[in-house]
Length: 244
Image (tube, rainbow, N blue to C red):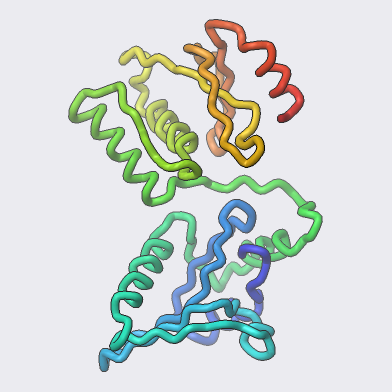
């Protein structure tokens, strides 16, 4: 549903006219910029082919659009097809992609309509966020360190933009559900920054010290209130108040 480029009628026709077709949809049209487009034809003869290019599943792209597509065959570029298949399977089994139900086309229609609104107006949509596969592996390792090896101080090192803050949120959520946080005596440390980037450079976090849990409500997304043991620096407080 990214950018609303897919034709609703095309998806509905595919699901209706091809009973053996299985379709999965990403309904997050704003956060995830899914722009990959490709076609893979597996043949029992071993002469499988793939077309990797720019054609959306739309009437214009399939008929009159000027598109670039590259044909790849298993005979001359087998390693490319293998990588293509592995990447597709990663998307297919991701929790972000949900099975399309031909009997209930309304969610997909609404997602396309929201994505096509130029001003971005419309009702706020809260997604049932789930960790990406690579984030899930990190969360599993953190759980293993705590439960099997009894290591409660663990450092996560990952590249910028891979969602370390989100990983921490998922980890804490699961920790809270475990109902054993208070007994184990965890200390919550708060880091903050006024903005992500300044002059195209990543802004570092500022350590604000330990904090005490005051209250929380909801789950998806969860809203939490913390009480710092020491006041936040005035400069950082003012910067956050301005919405920097």
